[in-house]
Amino acid sequence: MDLTRISLVELRDAIAAKKLGAEEAARGYLQRIEKLNARLHAYHEVYADRALARARAVDNGEITGPLAGVPLALKDNLCTDWGHTTCSSKMLANYQSPFTGTAVAKLEQAGAICLGKTVLDEFAMGSSTENSAVGPVRNPWNTDCVPGGSSGGSAAAMAADLCAGALGSDTGGSIRQPAALCGIVGLKPTYGRVSRWGLVAFGSSLDQIGPFGHTVADVALLLRTIAGVDPHDSTSVDQPVPDYVAQLDRKPDQLRIGLAKQYLSDANHPAVAKAIDDAVKIFQSAGAEIVQVDLPHTEYGIPTYYIVATAEASSNLARYDGVHYGHRAAQCDDLTDLYAASRAEGFGDEVKRRIMLGTYALSSGYFDAFYLRALKVRRLIKNDLDAAFARCDAILCPTTTGPAFRFGDKAGDPLAMYLNDIYTVNANLAGIPGISVPAGLADGLPVAIQLFGPLFDEPRLLRIARLYEQATGHGKLRPSI
Ligand code: GLN
Image (cartoon, rainbow, N blue to C red; front, side, top):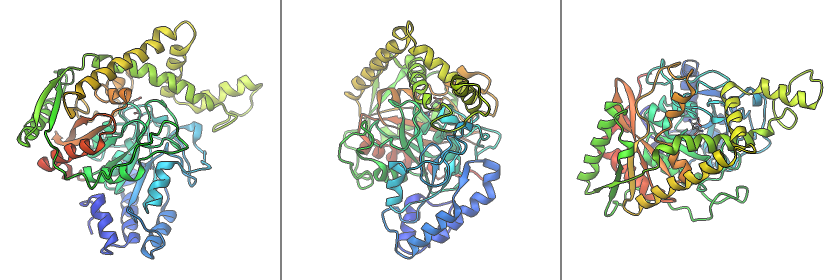
């Protein structure tokens, strides 16, 4: 069976029907990793023995479940009680988590097999995976280009079929943006839909774990498995988990698609602008009404996000002090010196920049002017979206302004890098779900459309995304690596 041509759902069905052994599938992916990972650097750590042992347990019936035998990749900021959880940081280079986080535990309980951990921008801070302390990830469509970030390793592994599905985390776009640049589907669920227990915290009011897949059905199946309330995460929401998969083919009734001028800038690459125009036609021919909505505070998304996210990061990353966790500097004179030297050695430049920005925004005398004001603008952004969703079922917009850029193009200019997130951060600020779906190629590189939905409306969002996917077939394109 050709592992580079099938979806997660097809693979799962083949294993369940015993047309394909779970061990055979795991070996197939491990061989592809062996062959391609040196070029792509998507995986930081691979658990071949553990994966094969679990695959054999699937084949002999000891492990069962709706994902039995499905090989997955995990972003390396998801805690597992095996292997390392490094966040692609020198700070956690040798860290072994004493526990497995909820989302990963649920996948394993459903029978999935974790092939390995994937490279990210250090502590999930970045949009290109160039901030990784273990080296960048390459885009399978063009290895001179970035795969996006921060979940670049998971997206590249997925796009190159080094796994059948993957998890990432999205604080300001880190699932959707790399999904767009790698030509796969990526979903950021509603804040609170998936437990964050076992996700290394970056911006706790923004972070959400979510799936990557080749198809909308694949991400629906993964979401169904990982969603739900969790006593370990007080921000997880106690709402029933719908059967996202079973509802996929229900025709969306009276579909209204919102378009906001704030997302249709002249700065968009022509292929992105065309993708949006084409999507409008597709939705119209499916009977949808196109509604103009206004999101006047959109332009404040980036400054607001980079205050809230850095403020939360500065607080979350205070725990890495050389005493409790991670890297400890040798030969220090006193405790203060130990803190300073351990943090100076353990964190990379971008993480330090975020800690400094966040500490500044939270410090006495500046708190009201920056952090408090950012929270107020965050509310205005959310109010805009709430008002828009009173008039439409989903908002259609680009995921990124253009296709993947080349290594080094933005690495020296933090502001240019931050502007990458212009179309993704507002979903995190408002807590709403967002999905990126492949929209074809521009000069051999993928572009994408994005759809936002109201809080907890993933069933309809996935149906709308599926309608688009089936009308276009772009998701079937694969890089010739
Ligand atoms: N690129 C954004 C940032 O650098 C988003 C990161 C993320 O979603 N983890 O903060």
